[in-house]
Image (cartoon, rainbow, N blue to C red; front, side, top):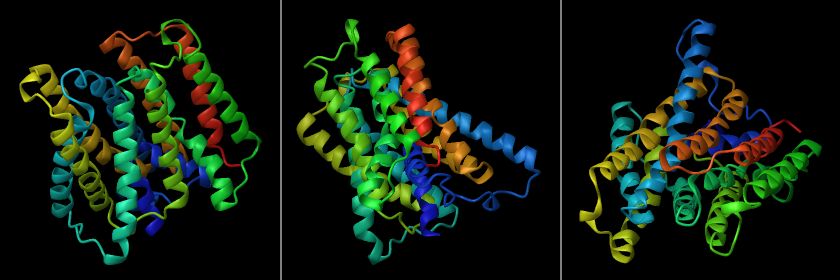
Amino acid sequence: MANSMAALYHTPASLAHAAVHGKAHFLFSASHGLNLPKLESRSIGLLCLAITSIGWGVNWPAMKFLLREWPPLFARGSAGVIAAIVIACIAAMCGQSLRVPRAQIGRLLVSAFINVIAWMGFTTLSLRWLQAGQAALLVYTMPVWATLLAWPFLGKRPGAASLCGLALCIGGVGLLFGGGELALGIDKLPGVLFALGAAILFALGTVAVAPLALPPLTTVAWQLALGCAPMLAYGLLVEKPDFSAITPAGMGVMTYMTIVPMGVCYMTWFAALRRLPPATASVATLLTPVVGVCAAALALGEPLGAREFAAMGLTLAGIALALRKA
């Protein structure tokens, strides 16, 4: 049961576990779902998966937009703390205990740092220097890093498919930053380091930290609270946001970030995992960075041409290879 909790962190968590453990059979079993006909259950699962991928994908340009009005850690921390309170209330209404056994506290703190402070905080900071599409593709290379880190930590030597996947990802990222106005320069380097740092730390946590033996919503609520509260405090004390700077559009984006990616999408993600094979769910969530790149082009006017499509194709092909069972 403890291993089944690994599914809840975020889309990348499932991707990393699938990369390291092949089919990731320890995620939520279909037997946990409702007693529905198989075809109907699969259709519902695919619909839930589509909602999840779109909601998380649109969040990339949403975060980028919000940074124009509020500083990054304050914005992310505020949304996360509110979401934690809401999810905790939902967990209580669903009968999930919010109590954390003493033996789980240390692991919970480590998980909150990796899955929230490093993952959410670093990715948000990367958007200060990178376009939303660039950051999304860099961060979603995380399954490849998980596959590579599984060698020294778990003794799982990467196979030929995983190494080819790494080469394709490097090629895709190189193409993305290879020239024109997107070329990688010293001005973009902090963003690249934050994005890759988020991906690598998350991958390291997936490989080296055992999953929490807590109910799903309880784990999400506690991790968001423990990870986002320090970001909110730092934002208030150091970033010193101008509360009057937020526009109605910015408040709408903030509301979206709180309700959809951190609330609705977690619920639909759980529902998808109850109805679909974990490997199918993991590969299907590769739609998330694609949605992020396309949404950023539509909403923010970021470039979207042959170079970007080719970079997406190479990067996602590499991730798909890394997710294959070695």
